[in-house]
Length: 499
Image (cartoon, rainbow, N blue to C red):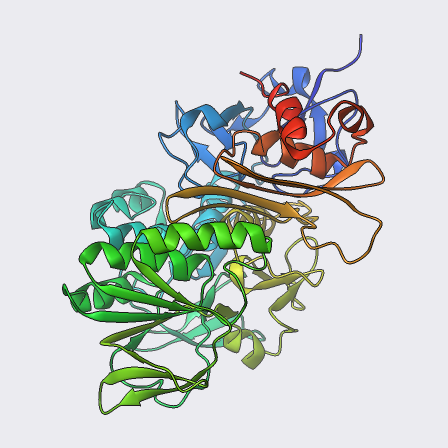
C-alpha cells in the first residue's frame, strides 16, 4: 500500500503524494526532513500545540481552532488546514546556553519560541529598540483605519514572556557587536554576553533624497509610533500625499481617507502594483481606488517637498504642485545591516546567510527582513516567521535546513482580494497566457504545460490550488486539454478545491 501523505518534521506541513516533496513549501527544508505521516502521528518526541496552516500564504497559527482571519493575508478559517506538530528535539539534559536575539519583530519572536521549545533550560533574551512588545506590524494600516484597537496589535500577551522564561529588554539599543568577546554593547546598559546570537533587526523605510524630505510632516509607516504620528495629523479636510503606489501605500491611503482626508497617491510607474499585477489588473485596482475617493498620479517624479518647517506642497517634475499637510513616504524598505557591517559580517543587499541561517560568523545567526539567502531578500511576514523558527532551533544545536520559499503575494488592498505568484511578466514567446477581465480577474501563465505564474483579483478561492500546482511544477496538460480560456481554467481548478 502506497503512502498517502508525508509530514515535515520541522514545521508540520503535510504533503499528500506517493513521495515526499523536493522541499517543504512552508519552511523550505529539503525532502529528507519528511517522514511518513502515519509514523509521525504516533506521537514520538516532544510536540507543540495544534497548528493550522493558511493554504493561501502559509502563515502558521497555533491554537485549538483556526483563527477567524489570517493575520497575514486575511483569509477566513475555511482556508486553514490542521497540520501535525513537528517533533521537537530537546538538547541533552544539563545542556544550557545563552541565546540573545536582537529585534522584536516576528522573526525575533519566532526564534525565541522555537529556541525555548527545543532547549527548555537555555537563557533567552530579546533586545528591541521599540517600547512595545512584539506586535503584528502588518496590521498597522488596519489600526490606522480603526478596524482594530491597540490591544489587538500584540502577538503575545505580556505575561507570556515571563511564563516562558524569556527576558525582553524594551527601549534598548544595541550599539555594537563584539563578535570576538561574544557580547553586545548596549546604550545605557551593561554589556550583554551570549553563546549564540540571532540578528532579527528587520528593515527601515527607504526615503529618497528629495529636497525638503526632513520637514516635520514628512513621515513613514513602519512602527506603532509612526502610526500614532499619522493619526494625530489626520484631521477632516486636510490634504495627504502618499509617495508610492505599492501595497503599503495603497493600504495606507485606504485607511487615511476614512478620516475624511483628501488623499493623493503618487506612483512612478504606469499602473498600480507593477511587480504583482499586469497593467489590466493594475488599472482595475485604480478604478476601485478612485471610487474610494483616492486621487492617483502616475508616471510622476517628485522634484521637492516645498514649505518651511512644514511641507505645504509636493512639487512634481512636470511642474504640478500637490497641496499637502501631510506626506507619507512608502517607497520600500532597506535592511538594518549596520550592526552586522560594523561587526565584520558578510553583507550584500542583506546579511548573507547559509542554509542553516548562519552568517559568516558561525555563532551568529540571522533571520527576517535583514537576511539575504542565496541572493533573495524576501521582506515579507511568512518567510520571516519561518526563518526565525529555523534560526532559533539551530542556535540551540539543531540541524535544520532553510532551502528557500517560492515567492507569492496574498494581498487585500482597497478591500479587494488579490493573489499573485510566480512569473507574471513573461519575457519571450515561449509562454502561453490566458486572461479574463470579467466579474473577477484571472491571469494564468504556462510554459511547457506547467503553470508558472498567476494573478487572481476578486475571487481568490482557487489560490491554494494554483499555489500547489506552481510549487509542485507538475504538468497541466490535462487541464489545458479541456480548458481553452482563463474562465475555463478557473472552472476546472475550482473542482480541485477540497471542501
